[in-house]
Image (cartoon, rainbow, N blue to C red):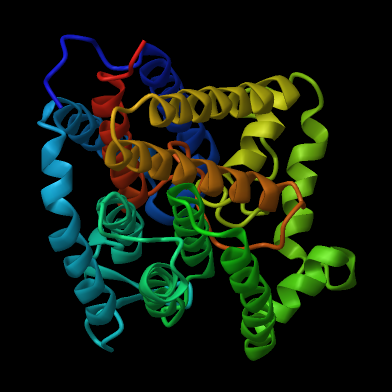
Length: 366
């Protein structure tokens, strides 16, 4: 594919920067009370979020300018590296345990989450694999089964941490790519039936997941236990009304709502900025998803089309699950809101993935 003189998609760039600006402001507002209580520095998390955002934006524009053919060559070694890291992180004493999950590698604040990189690694590899002329995704034995084995292997390693949220995003994105690549609906439908049974098994195997399902159906049955997160989230969203209480005026962030600057940042945003603010964020995500799929449908070959669709689907699924969780539409699971939630690995990786999307947007056919 020859280098074009066209600029990256302006709608995507504008949506990303607006989401980042809102994200930095909300991370400060949501974390100020907790940060001062724990570190005696109300800007503790906000300063780090700015640093992560700057690093991510640098990576985004760097990737947006490189030769897109390099994505093809990076796919296999990146996925192999991700699988190795997923195994290393499970070693006691090596992987860092946080919130009950052994998902991190590194030292203190300088750590990475291999499962986040695996999402992008799987997208790159699937795009390369499915675009080969010799690959037959519609063939059950030679195409569909090998694809599902690879996807389920990565999902299984992530679940050993355990990290159901990231695993769900990985699995959902992979299934969308398998569908787009041309898999037969009979094959996908059969797998989904098995997947539902497997999901039920995963829930029954862990008492805390059963509690989350029960809390989802009736959070008031255990308001100080399993239902606490959802109830406090709804206490934040409800009073927001149309215009919100005002930036910085959240009540729930004062050590009532757990993880107000990460998993539940959308709740604080709705409380302070109301329906207008929450709706604006959803519209920005909708614009990003619309333009992302537009890029995917306009690519000159299948590899770039699958790559753009994969990145867009990853963002769509993660944002949809997070917003659904905090509003009570889905059971509570630990997953961040792209571009808004505090977090180094997630924010930097997602911005790097958008860099791929911006790179490909230069070649959209009119």
